[in-house]
Image (tube, rainbow, N blue to C red; front, top):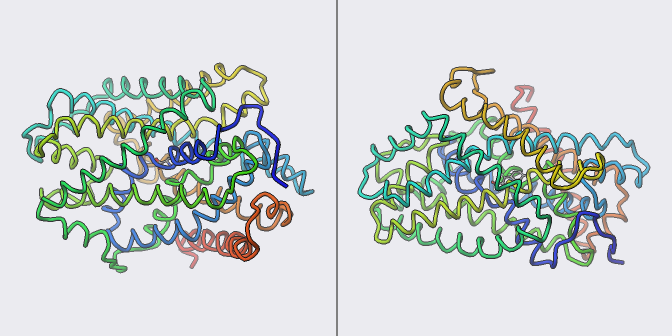
Length: 452
Ligand code: PFF
């Protein structure tokens, strides 16, 4: 029988609305900004293969599990974990899994908002024609200038955080559903246009070879961890974002089918962005391992040279900004829902408190790109540290814990009831969730720790 309960925070208006919102959460800076640069830093093809394998074997099964937990619990991740643990007669301390997710979301949003601020700054640069006719050195200079200026970055970071809070305040259906309906298809079309441009660079084949010809000698345990961590990051897994979105999902929607759409769209966007970027890197003798500035130093070159580039440049950065916004709201939603449930405050107050504290940490992240760039711990500045701690540790651990909970703690028939899959499909998923997912994450950790 379908689950007919509802969350006190609201519900998506339809299955399609959920797909859009969850795709909005998944598709973001991770796909367009992060995936290309970590692929560049980790040698290309082999990294892409490991990433795709992680999406298929870990990401999809864990996404199904996380949405299912959310829909069964119908509360913030912390309370959902507590009540599902009780329902299964297990230790209520499973709610710490919700805590770890909430903290991860908070830490991610602090730097996510700074990068989204860069995208906003670039909308204006594009508008004022800053890319037109510029060569690679001038474009790099533009980026370096922005990095050197904390006040500008803080301004844009503040603006982005403000907008995130403004959307989250409006609740589930109010702002968000509408924005993503228009955004996703347009983003896709624009990426195809950029890939079209990349085909004209003369280095298209070199770019595609770099991405799809695996050379496994370039990959070590750390690269595998980064690829696995990114599979969690890009699908918004392991921290309760997809869980809370699942808690607003009507009871009669098929979770497994929807998951395939979301993961498929997410993967296609990441691959298209990379296919658009790497030919430009090679055509302009840029550094594949340029790091977080990669898209800001490559795509403006294309906009500066192609016909219609002025308009495409503006539209692209507007879309990147929207893609970031539809993800950032899901990063903060678990904390907001928990504050409303447990502290009995209004939704708008919860948004202000969580948003402000995240903003403050974001200001410190801005400094890590300039005045505090030398302040490091384990050889990483604050931005790198937050990124590593969340994407490479907290999210995979959260994903592993979700798999263990669903595979070993929850009653099988509850999962069967919630997923309503044909039995062969359920069996495959259950095997992956019980054995493969926890074991794979664990093995990667052992490797990185040098134990294996
Ligand atoms: N999936 C988003 C991206 O790829 O940009 C980032 C993200 C959103 C990560 C929500 C985690 C999350 F819970």
